[in-house]
Amino acid sequence: MTQLRKAVLTGCLQTIAVYDDFCHANDPHGEHDFGAFEADGHKIFFKIDLYEEPDVKDPNGEPIVNRVMTIMLAEEY
Image: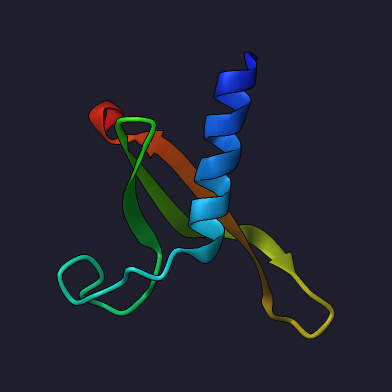
């Protein structure tokens, strides 16, 4: 990976970490699980999904849920 790609990736991760541009137009259900921004001349999408482990429970009987984040170029959608 080139230094430029590393810098762009680092910038994207930093942008996502502080992202707060949620409004009714892009977050109608108030879930704060999707965002879009510009980076290095490209539109970037990120999406956070919940994944429940099938048939796996914690000691209290609650399902084990993981968050999975997808980051992609908007043009790949």
